[in-house]
Amino acid sequence: MSNYLQDLIRAFKPNTSVSKMTMTLIIVVQVIIALAAWYSSSEILPRPPEIFGAFNRLLKGGDLIRELFTSMGLCLQAMGLAILISLALSYLTVLPFFRPTAFIVSKGRFLTLVGLSFVFTLLTSGGHNLKVSLMVFGITVFFVTSAIAMIQAIPKTEFNHARTLGMSEWQTVWEVIILGRLHEVFEIIRQNFAISWMMLTMVEGISRAEGGIGAMLLNQNKHLHLDAVFAIQILILLVGIGMDYLIGVIKNIICPYASLSLERR
Amino acid sequence: MTHEFKNTILKVENVSLNLGGNQILRDVNVDIRDVVRPGMSQGQIVGFLGPSGIGKTKFFEILAGLIKPDSGQVLLGDPLTPVKVGRVGVVQQSYPLFSHRTVMGNLMVAAARKGLPANEQKIKCEEMLAHFGLQGHANKFPAELSGGQRQRVAIAQQLLCSDHFLLLDEPFSGLDIIMIEKVCELLRSIAALHEHNTIIVVSHDIESTASIADTLWVMGRDRDDKGDLIPGSRIKYTYNLIERGLAWQENVMGRRDFHELVDEVRGLFKTL
Image (cartoon, rainbow over all chains, first blue to last red; front, side, top):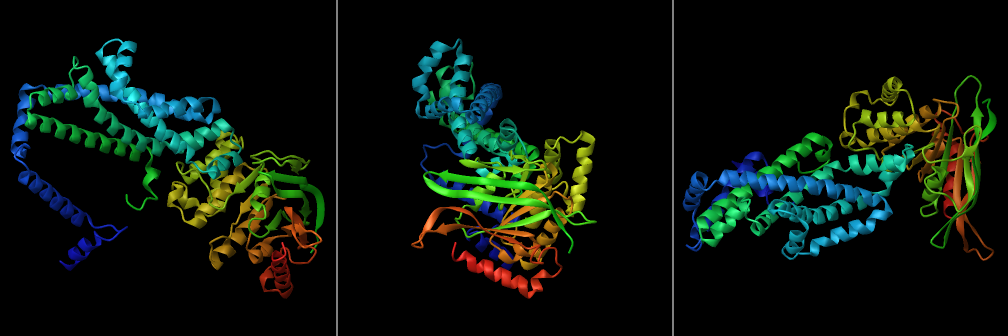
């Protein structure tokens, strides 16, 4: 008992770790507090049983799973394209010629997608292409910003190390920036997947013809089905967390060295 | 001890460097000659000493071919040819390695750079692992190595692809006495691997550096008539430890004349 107590006290000390058992206990306590707060809050907010009921209703009659897959397809397509464009543009900043372009693209994050939707409507054909374009734009501006910052943070000693091995400047780029920072690219993908998942609802709201979980959420919102809104939100949250975890697992498989020197694994 | 100085294998001619209006180096001139000892393979070890902020790092980078001086040149090899980046192995103080590659992967990259045939690359890398006592660590990533192991991998990597020249920046920094002795022994063994192996050790540790070197360079600035420092460092003093009978000696650190030399160099530091 005293060991558990000591472990629990350690949870309030900086830069320490606790046992798995204590961490599980902490999580359970925090979940109970959150649920208690939820139940004791205003009656306007739907309670867990109502949300669970709405979830069942959407599953049976609302094509929830089909809409979820539609959204995931859109998200993955946009992510794939955005990763290709962003990485190409970011890696090309090793050439001074491409730096202004990358700089301008990264500043695009201060623009609003709603404002740009009209421009993209004119530039693209069909609702799907419009959504993909908006998503790719929205992800790319953030991705390029992070990737450029990652490249700029590489110390000179790492470049010199590659050069002293007789590598050409392109080989240095390959070894130090592309291979050497692959684990950080995975982290950027993780962050940007969360951004894209968050944008999805808004983008699907602009063009609802194809459906998707975002369109479904907006429809439920319009009819003030708060229990269904909460059910969809929780599903979006869980899928997002699941995808984030999956990207982390892939990162650990491809880049096993990345977490070796970290204090918290 | 019988020895003979043969051809010059590293020559620094009138090297000057100015950065942002500050004269860092001024007319640096030194040369290293191949020391030949009958019946044995004897490389050269040069200790490069000087107080902080004197321009050692910049000179180091010029020797490695990483930056070009404003005037003058560095020639190396036999016959002498201008230095190019990649010809001189550089082991920086932080012992940088490719963190995404294993120890073996790091060595294989260097072996490939040297242009060795594919079947020879692995053999050469395994020889290096054995020589540096790293056989059990071939599949580890750099983050899994101790500081000493990391240093040995970094040296092995550079030796695999350089042209017999190795620059080491502060190899004794942060090490305890036992580890310093091990590093000294390692550097002596590397020098003995090939007749033309030339190791330049940049260090603040006068005693450890002098114990393995056959030549000491002391970098500093001149003073004008008023005693003010003249901008731009150069190699002010060169000590030939072979002539003094202090090179290649067992237990040299126990000798009185060795300590007199160390005190002399230490005294110089205050005037540089």
